Image (cartoon, rainbow, N blue to C red; front, side):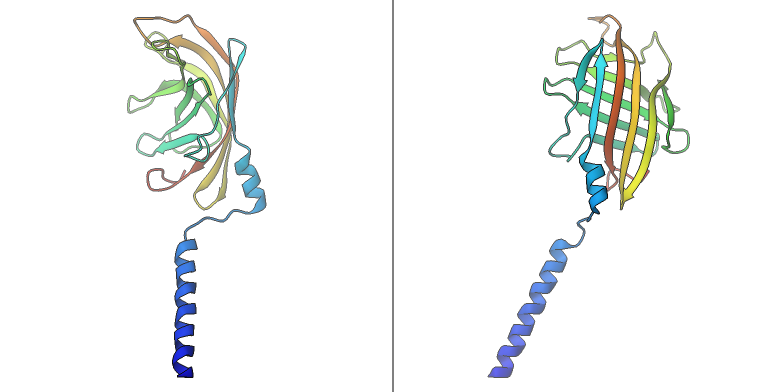
Length: 194
């Protein structure tokens, strides 16, 4: 009888250990320094001299950052408390590396640049329009750092002139200055490694 209970106990302990292994496997563990880098994310700019601050999404554990490998297009999106949003969209010829990225269309016809979507409808603005087909160096990526498995730290600056995108309600040109960001890109099923 004692042998049977010992085998049962060993079996239970083994099953529990296997259960813990399965539950905890796949969770990425970051070092203290990496956690600190990931905690300090920001996204802000001045629009006509007025500070605009984006806030990280709780669902995404940061800002929305996506990469489309076919067009080599990287997009960073941030929303403010007033429901306005700024999106940076830029592409690379080969791969995403530190450097200057102009507002233009890429080889696939996708627009790259700075896009501002205020809370007011039909007042959307962009650094590229049909009338202004290119602006040099609107986004400057200063750092692309591999932190750990499938996690990258992206830092940079952005500025430019924003023009109204709606043909119905043309907004006057606005100056976007002092733009800066530090965001985390997580590669995964829908986002390949940089």
